[in-house]
Image (cartoon, rainbow, N blue to C red; front, side, top):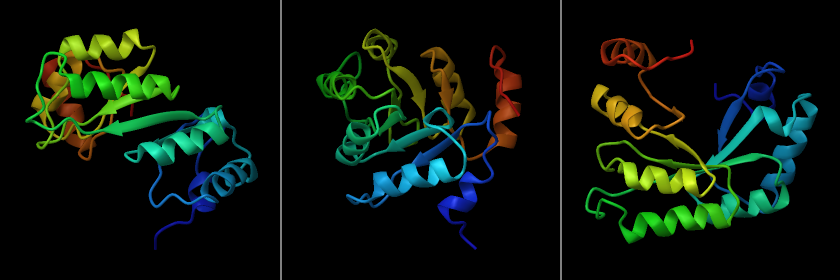
Length: 172
């Protein structure tokens, strides 16, 4: 059974954080989501709202600016590295929208950010997090650019990768 939002929010402890990804955004979504968070006895501080859909995330953030918003962004392998204009424009767009974090992919279809691009994210006042860290090499690249956090589909393996690479602390 796929749990309902109320059921998922009920599992979040008062000190915990849930990252919720927007899928299929409608004009009613923001109000329904915020009401569910309140009904669960949680606050904006317990939630990170993420999406690949910039317009949906922007609308949500304008309605509820106290939630931390994280833009999931793919950087295609054929995108120029070393501060390519496409990546710079996405970083600017994220900062201009006053989102909390910029979150590029580390999947096989994406290229990792360069150190120069990672610095641009930080200089823009954004948290740098990454998604799709599903191989040891991606975790090494994540560490190299100084990402603050990452998502992974293979957490058991990630603990082994972190141990083997050294210099990475994962929280259980």
